[in-house]
Image (cartoon, rainbow, N blue to C red; front, side, top):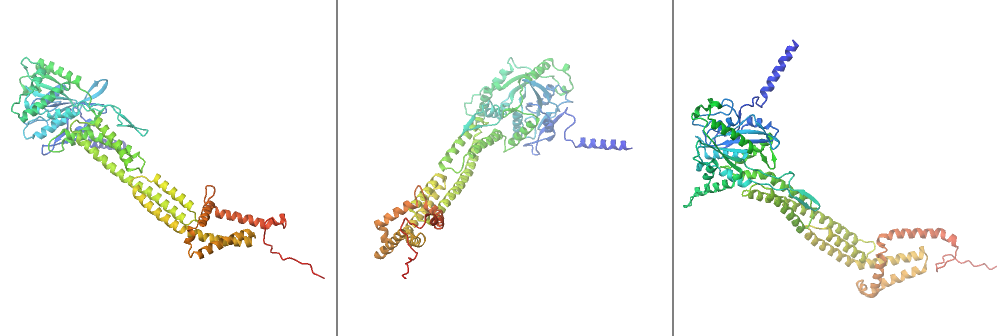
Length: 617
């Protein structure tokens, strides 16, 4: 009983998994990959067929057949695949077209192309000029088949009409934009950094499909099929200046120049009874047709190559992604254009060129002067634009992408300019604040010194000039000069008065020290002389300012400056340590010096001890 339940659960699970899987079980059938939208003007993806392609891991090649409706495209594909009508693509004989959109045969043909195992898919396209469709829709079908295919078979019954040539305008424009685009990868060296313009390690190329003119006609009237094609592509005289004839002649001229990328082949009718072809086997068909059909198979196999986009072959998943991009581009606007395709192909190149510019400009150390930044921007921009010019797709429609690249570069540069302004302002503000603090410190020196102030002033100014760079320098330079000018004026204004007060105080302090501490009479006398001179001179001339112009004062100032600040000693910095050391020496001398040296004095000192006289008896 338990085994039965397990088996039942297993069966239900397998059935659920099988029913939930989107991948088709039978690949021996045709699947739609692109279908018309409800308005039958644009195209949309059909997921079922794309799932089939995505499973392919080997390089992909595509054979597509295009042509008027009811021209035998589906039958031709079945013949190339060696399939009957019941097995292969659906074949219709009614007035409306059987195939809608683009269909793919689910099982690819494996070919060895230049030593590479390649999966070749066959595409069937909706015929041109069928009932109820717009020309724009036909153009989109034609454009998509042109871009996707490796070999494009242009299936034409009987002859080549002027309308058939006109339809190749997109293929011609595509070829003019992309054909033969193959360039090496330059390496750029800047500031000891090496830049590979792109990371892909091979040439970049997108070659349009090989165009195969297939004329289904029994009699060529003594001409080869290639001569027939060449005659159809011969320029038509246009003495009246007809615009339509000029346009078709331009297409003819371009097709003639594409000779290496096109070939021609004729295929006779398989049988007179065309409506019964699906019921016939090879031995019932015209032997000439069977022979030519086999030759056509060999021709297709000999000219087909894996689909190459941007320098690399595509596997199934990459091919589907490529298809999605192309379809989106072709659905833009009212009519499909190579310009929209050029934008798709250049999108990745544009992003890489933009990254190249961004990487190079980001290596610049901010802040910089405006001129230096502009030079770095100019060099980086030129290299990015040069990379784009050498690698872009399209010869005529790439201008829009180039303009877009320039606009994006300018956006990045504007952000860099703003960042440079910010960094410059931040750096100069820091230097300005540092100088401002330095000036404030110099204003309150313990020992006023003009030499020290001037040295600090010069050092601050030089440091600012060397380190402050960028667009903010001019503004901060003006602020700095204004601030330092005020600071210097204030220091000079207070310098003489502070020095005078300091000398008066110093003279009184030295009087006290000479009399009561050191007890050195010469120091006391010198201090009294300084004090009396300073106080008497200012009283005699009514003001201290008169003293400042006296030569004696200048000598005092010069002596003071040499003592307070010189290359050997900064007394303002070391005054307190020196005073402490002096006090310690004095203390030591007072406590221990007299015991060792006795009571003899070398210098004249004050004698504070009272003299003793002997009593008279």
